[in-house]
Image (cartoon, rainbow, N blue to C red):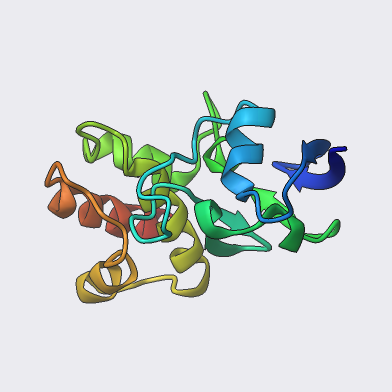
Length: 156
């Protein structure tokens, strides 16, 4: 029999079902809640495409078991960061710098950068590169991504 878990996702209290406590948070976000920001990439927590925030920290949702998320923890996905006319400064900067090519890695890049900028207001280019080093992009838009993060840091 499936268990139910109450989650706080993007400011909403939701309930998801699961049979296996080791089920990745990513599956609940995408399959049960229909959120498409976090992506399934490597499934090993190495590429960053699945990154979300849990209590403000960047977390790889593909390797975070649903059972480890507490009822009071706040989960934010790319959709919760900003949408439509109300974009987060990072999302706007990524658009302005045309930092998206295929778009697959962008969720992880933006979510990792947002958590980084929350603790480092005016980073250097080297600090940005270091903060994003474990997020993979196969398209090669790295220089635009770094410029977008720099632009966003100046806007906040």
